[in-house]
Image 1 (spheres, one colour):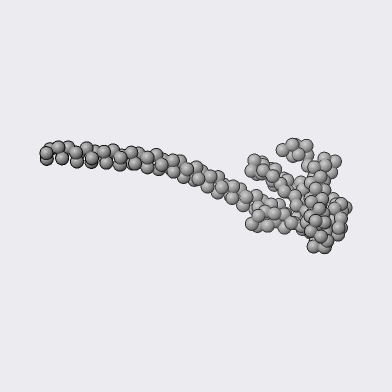
Image 2 (image 1 turned 180 degrees about the horizontal axis):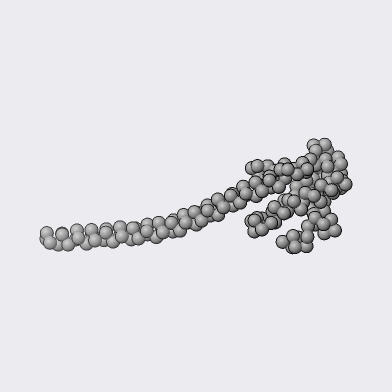
Length: 173
């Protein structure tokens, strides 16, 4: 009877051990999956760190490009956004580029693109965003339309090859 009871206890312990082994194996698989996810996140973090470094380098290059020129251009040190006095481009309530704006763009855009589309940063640039702004006079919809139209005209100006601002290669890029 004692031997039978010992055998039952052994089988129960053995079954319990097997259940624990199954649990351990499942946990091992889960740990491996989590390790793979962690490795992916680490890879993404490395890429993000590189991108932040590239962004910082682009901002520094733009600041250096426009630091000692006659154009009144401001480069935001955090975002790299370029700002300048819109008054030189458009009259109040107008979307047509002024003569001064035309001259400004013909000087500004090639300098700007020489930094962004030069050998150093060309592969890191995914898009260039052109935004138009207005004053607060008028309705929201009027100003929204005006700002979009202004941005469109600046983009059209840049893409118009006869203005000599962009080359065919830069447009294709």
